[in-house]
Length: 206
Image (cartoon, rainbow, N blue to C red; front, side, top):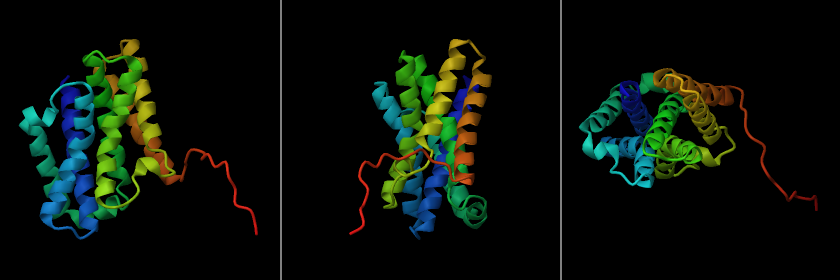
């Protein structure tokens, strides 16, 4: 449980960095960057907790707010260096969604969710913060673009459920599942991989 808890905190901080960096790219002031980092970090987890009929974890545990402010602070003081390392936010997104997917699935299972529901809630936990960030920045959310994003989350969530049913150690399971999400996301960005689109109509030459 300690591994899951600290993974959740780390994922929260990483998503706060991602959100604040997006704001910095759009020349938004410090308050705006802090707000964007905050909603990016708590958006997916809060939605998950609402579906589980429990209070969002950051309301009761101040460590999550500390993690968010640390992430925002890092993004502000090291913005140029971070920008060189992750110019498309892909690296930080990949790390964040890996941790958040695992935490979402594990927490959902611990509250009695079915395996399928836990997989879906794991995806929501990982992706909705980025959706909120992108909407605030007035860009099409990654989950709606022709990219492998939610699919990576679903893959990691399914692996976690499968390994959990085989009673694999929780820490090992979390690491392997988060690593799978990260690997799929990074490879899809590096090699420009995407799922096929459904386009029933084709434009005809006049």
